[in-house]
Image 1 (spheres, one colour):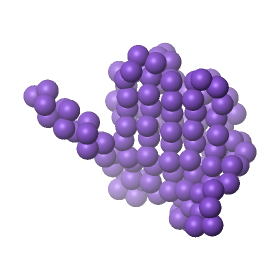
Image 2 (cartoon, helix red, strand yellow):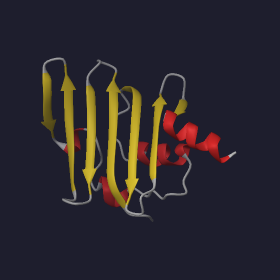
Image 3 (cartoon, helix red, strand yellow):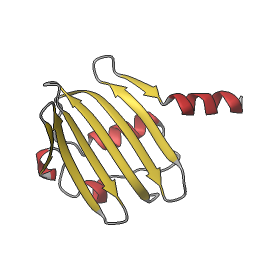
Length: 121
């Protein structure tokens, strides 16, 4: 397992609120913020993610976006969202970023990564 430096998940829920889950290895804390038109409010991590989220999350730099998505969804207690943005930074500098549209079941790569992939061809 590669060590995660930072992790940000942004869920657009069915009621148009946004839930942001953030983890930083510096302080080893997970924050969950509920963002609505009225503002932001920090909420209990147990209201959205499973206990021991980071400890049970197995991610590595060589995983496909689909495998990263499946690993993340296995650690989330809610299924009431329509979009998910994922940003993972590993201690070795590797980053994985993508968006997932639940309705179409499609993963969209970050535009910068798509350009990088084209340069390698």
